Length: 533
Image (cartoon, rainbow, N blue to C red; front, side, top):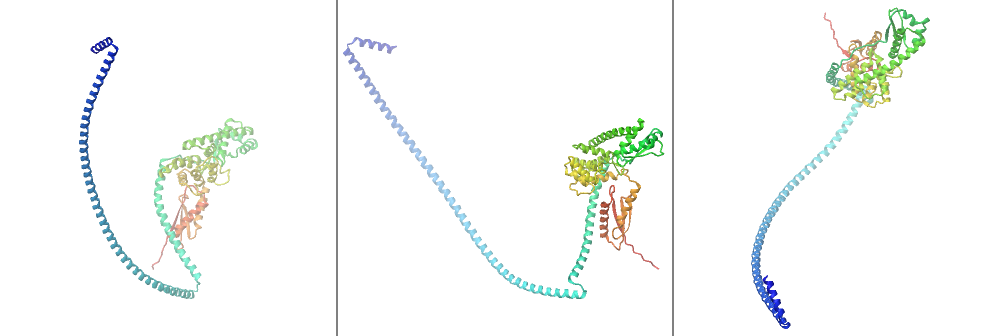
């Protein structure tokens, strides 16, 4: 407010002056201001100069101090580098001296080796001279031996009256006989050792499988009896002049046996399916009472359809019991047909189920796939369902049928076709099926055969054994499960006994049909007799 009042007062004062005076006053004021500004500037310049001088002096002092510090650091670093360089030079000199020493030692070693090589070369040269002399001497000895050998051969030929070729053939014959005997002895020893080990393991596995599975033993016959309420129906079954029984036999393909046995009419046929159809048809006709050709045809056709459905049901039940899946409907039908098929009196379908379980147990002990073994065992006898309709053996028929109806597993096909040795075994499942088949058929009560066939089989077995050279007698024992062969001790030695046993076994396998297996035992006995008087 003071400044404002002063300015106001100045303005009022200037307004009261004349224009010239005012200009003079303003100029004077401006000059005074300029002089004041100049004085201030000069003062500021002097102070700035003093401060600049102080700054320069301070900077010079700092710069000199830093320069001295840098010089000291540089001198220290130079000293360190010089010491480091001296150390490196010292190490380098030491390494160079060591390298020179090693080089000197290597030169000494090389000189020694060179001397040794020189001595070795001298010895080799001496040996070469000795070897060449020995070769010359050896060649002379060989020529002399050849001349002596030739002279000896000529002398032997003159003494023996044999030519060189004849003597060679005689020598070869003797060697062949000796080698054959030695080979037979060696083969006997090897097989005995292998059989001893294999027999123990096979016995253990087989006994385990038999103990863990026990199926029913049932034998079926080719003759089936049909009970009738009274014997009067026999006449009605026969019909006027036998027309009913003749038509019945013609339609069904069976033989009807009507004898004096009370209350029974027998139906006989080798085909169990036709036998079942005929027996079922005859039972229905007897119960119905209407027996004439037209009624016979109607009832037989109905029974055929019922038996066919029963076969399919039996095949499905068997496949489910054996836990075999993915079978073609025709395969299931053929397996059901085995329900009406027998082998030595044993039901083939039950036999197949039993073999399937035995195969699984044996395969499990051997670390193989149980499902594959069970499938192979279940289908191994499927060819028996059609072997009376198709030419050939049931293994080949079954393998071809299974292949045509979707069976692709090589193990199963080979087991079907090779479980009787008709084709070589390509998988381990084939001998498993063969073993299980033999176990199932050899169980007591499982199979039977007629007395006539039994006697023929024993006679054929003994005849095959007697045909071998050197055999005196042969006896079939244990119901044909074993044949004892007695050989002449003067005509056959121990090694030939082994060969005779193998030959008899091969011929039995090739020429005979039998259930299970037959053991061949060859006996050789030397008896020396003397009389004291």
